[in-house]
Structure formats: C-alpha cells, structure tokens
Image 1 (cartoon, one colour):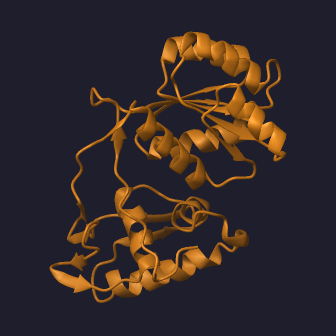
Image 2 (image 1 turned 90 degrees about the horizontal axis):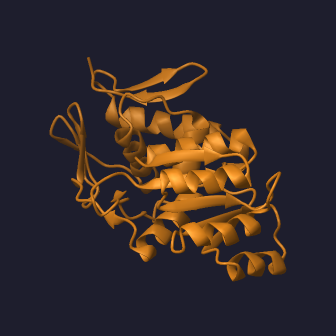
Image 3 (image 1 turned 60 degrees about the vertical axis):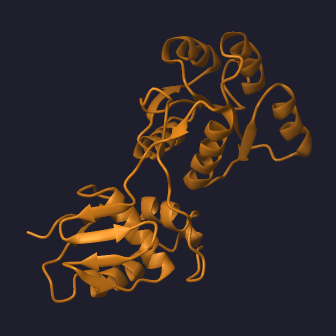
Length: 248
C-alpha cells in the first residue's frame, strides 16, 4: 500500500514505434484469469488476444504478431516451456513473461533457461504483471513512450501528473498521495464504471486483504474535497462500482 510519503511516478503510455497500440498475447487455460488479464491490459490501451493452449498460442503468434507474450507454464497440451521453445523459431526476440503456480527455484531457472524473459508467481496482482510487461517492452525496444499530456482534465477538474497539483473550477485542492493516485485512476477512466476490485488492484497494488471498505473510505475522502459544495462528479453505482464524469 502506498503511504502519504510515497508517490508513484506518472505512468507513461507505451506504443509501437509506428504509433500503433502495443500487442500482447495472453496464454492461459483458466478463462477467468485470462479475461481478467485481458481487461487490465486493455485498460493500458493495448491490443490483446488470448489462447487457451499451447498449439493455439503458436498459431496466434503467427497471426497476431504480438510485442509481448504472457505465458502460463501449466497448459493442457504443451507446457509453457515447450511452447516457448517452438515460439522462438517463429518470434526469436519477442519478450515472454511466464505465469506459474510453481515457486521452486529450479522452475524459475528452467523458465529463464529456455528463453523466458521474466516470471510472475501465482497469485499475483494485475499491477505487477503490467509493471513487468512494461519493463520488458521498454528493454526490448518493441515499444516506445508516447508523447502524453501531463494534465488530465474532466469537466472543470484538472490534475497535473508532473506537479501533482489538482484543481476544480480554478480552485486548488490538496490531496494526500493515496487520494491523488485514486483520483488519477478515476480521471484516466472518465465515464467508466470501476469496481472496488479494480481500484484496489490499481491504487493499492494488491487486494489489501480483501478489505474493500478501504475504497469506500478513500472515495468519501475524495468526495469531501472534490465535490463538497459543488455539483457531484464522483458517483456510486450500487453493486457495480464508481464512476467519475463531468458535473451536469
């Protein structure tokens, strides 16, 4: 969890050198997990394709030509190591991030020995997977940082990611580091309903012991500072989550 003294650097969008979105292939036979990963990666603005087994993954690599591959070790036909050996014949330089439930040192070494670039051990946070993918993409040169405005604006609310200044209607608002991160996530996804689970994973990195009430608490803090005495911008959709949109 971030403390009030810790401030994460502004996230920079990554794109292919031609300006197109980064392409990521997710290979996992657990459809729920694959869908969750795909959703998180699409929030990054990336194109995502999934495959549920090794042979489907190899076919997708040829057709989709991904910039990175998230590869589960335990697959129903070929294991991830075998998939990677074959994949290297088609895409010798594409970065591969292994997902594995195994945490033995020999398994980690095996994955890196056959040509994997990094690994994440289950259970993991979505933020950790994204952070590792971003690092791999940067190192590989397959993706470059896109030029991006430092100031996010939704209605009369603005947030400067460089100076960490927040204002509404021209009036400065003082936020703690965690409040700032929460508001930044909401402002990066205007008019989009964000669940408590998504917010926990992005702002607090892990599930915070399942204590979703921490989200309610910080949403209330933000409302007191952002919406107090003004038309509300932060809305609750019962059973779904929260959404930030321009005041009506």
